Length: 462
Image (cartoon, rainbow, N blue to C red; front, side, top):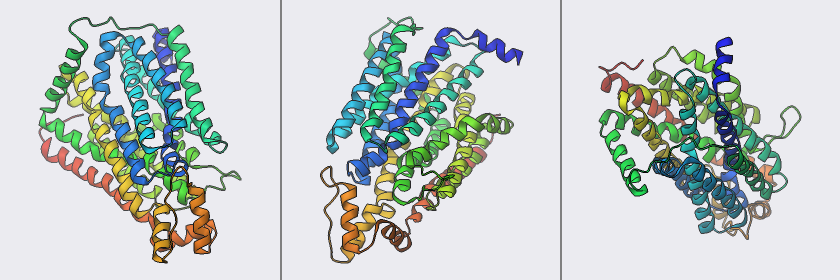
């Protein structure tokens, strides 16, 4: 304990300032992102395909662009980039709260994603610069904790506000991000000595050359390609699960309280806050690749169970199982990349480790749209049943809401809302989608096992 206290005392003020901004940024981001799929389909009336395209493309850019934005930040300084990022965040949230057309929302979310890409490499870069060999492990542990506290509080509080108005959700994200404006102006001191060697364009070009160099390691490239499957299964927590909860689940009785989809998804981060240290202690004795594989199998089980029932308590258990898999595997991903990288190329390899996350967001958007939309989306299944009976309902739009759609369906089918839900559940079995999402994870785990056994058979990564 005395050593831990000594480490804590060594952190400079900038360390705590940076972690505070990370917490508020994650609060603002997940406060709207965990609700975004339902906002697009329920509030704006977009199809699952449109929802998947918006979230997939924007989130892909969020994870791909830091390879460029990091180089820009090193060139012009972290503080300037943070000011730009927060301004884009606030204005982007404002645009998304007012716009309703598909094109305007698509562009607005891309704009917000660029804001996130500007922010993403800076705080981790700052922490790396203000910690040393003695303090970095604890420092990044605190950083990871801040991410999950923000990821829990944002959706939890937004889950209360969404029952009042969607506008309050965006106002919450804007208000929390405005706090970061105050912090960066008055408390953040730029740790970067601006790089004046060459132009910004040359820095970006060099960043792409570095990516090409790392990907020329074919074993590493294969590993990154396989990890696309991992992150695709993982991302269904944000893309599809909220929609499934909103359409099919009974969340009406949790110790006498009713919760909604946003509060349910926030439990993933809550479980991580409670149990990450326990799980990390258990898996620390395993090779990183073995921990990734076993964690992915557990995560895949959780993903499957998340789409297998309407019972709220069962779905909460599924989220808990999912979080155990995430805790066992996700932190080990970065550790594994750091260990297989050449000693003088660790930072370069770590930068490219975001590429499969970017690709997986695009793929997750496709699955959440085309696959879920044709198998388990309630609106689509109502349309199928209505057409089967020779009837019709206008398509969803900003002028014809999901609530109007349901009311018309009740009239045409002669059932109330709950009766329609149960009829569709029993007739069309939307749980079939769980085999696809869980199957992607299990198949990826098998490929990772074969990769480790046969391709890396002469290379032990402890």
